[in-house]
Image (tube, rainbow, N blue to C red; front, side, top):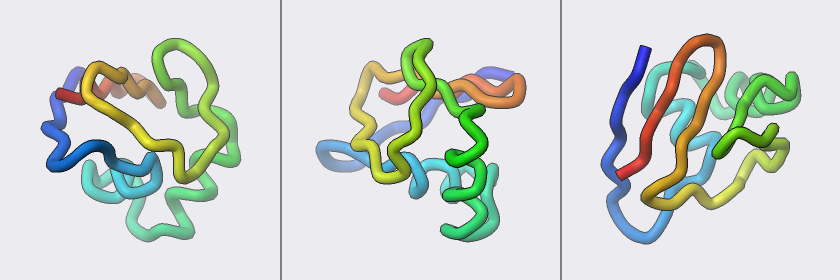
Length: 69
C-alpha cells in the first residue's frame, strides 16, 4: 500500500508520523514499532524515534510505503 503525506512546516518526527497515519495508536506504541527495527527511511533502518522527516523521504514498514511531500 502506498500513501502520500504532506508535511506542514519543515519536518515531522517519525513517531508523530506513525500516529498521524494510524499505524500506532499512542506515542508508546510508535516507540515500540521503531524499536523493532522494522521502519525503513529511504531504504535504511531508522532507529531514531524522533528522526526529523522531511519532504522527499520515503518511510516503509509492514508493506506500507509513505512518501512525504
